[in-house]
Amino acid sequence: MSARTLVFVLLFVLPPQAKPWLLRVLLGAQVGRGVSIGWFASVMGRHVALGDYSAVRPFTLIRCTGDVVIGRYALISSFTLVYGAAGLSVGEHSYIGPQCLINTEEDVRLGRWSALGARCMVYTHGSWFPYTEGYWVRFGPVTIGDYVWCAAGVFLHPGVEIGEHSFINSAAVVRGVLPAGAVAEGNPAQQVGEIDRMRRTMSSRRLDAAVGQMLRHFAALTLQQAEGLRVQEQADGVLSFRRGRTDYRIVPVGIQGPDALASDGPARHIWVISRPHWRPSGSPLWLDLHAGTMTQARDPVYVELALFLKRYYGIQLEYQDGAQPR
Picture 1 (cartoon, rainbow, N blue to C red):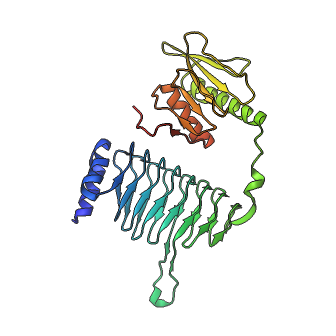
Picture 2: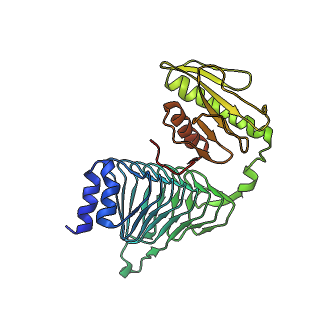
């Protein structure tokens, strides 16, 4: 058994808190703050670099002969398998969904703020029948640009290039090159539209309405359905509920709202802010959707709300001061 294989096995069986330390000490890996590698997960490459607050979920295996670079706040979900003779690069705030399979016989690059949905497959090498009998063999790197979303079940062939700000619909089979700004689907995938036509112009009124819709969805799906809590919505969009012994209020601070807002009563307030340059006085429980930041607070409802916005609405927030959450 080679030394790297032994390290790979050790990483697999060790508890999560020991894995970043082992990568630093035995492989000389660059491991940022707040990095997490889950139970029965392992990462191996010629050189490994894991950015701040990046995460490899449990039961995921990454074993590349080339470099493995995972950017800040990137997430690789459970039951993902990455293997091959070349390398993997995942940009900051990008996402690889559960049960993905990525072959890295040639380099695979996923850009910034991009995503592979659940059960996507990426191949950089294709062959089975004997090449010496005249059958073809295909090698080629796969490059996915910034702000690209490949929905669930997309298959990417060797040599695929997808331009930035593109959307590939579920179960598409992609060959060749797709231009920037494309909306594509089918087998073989063909461009059926342009991403700019999918986007709405977000006026102040629309943005405030969008925040209200997200909070109502959080109340219905997480607070009421999952936790069985009773939630009241006030006329100004404030959500009030009691969890355990604590009274909560989730307060949207919109662009078109009043100039000053204050905490009224003893309830614990969580502020959801879309107004530029606004902060609550003396409260650590705020999510700034305009600046893309949040605090280190570990209040369970606050953390659950941030996760909900990320999982269901694509809103990714960074810790304001870059410090590891406590």
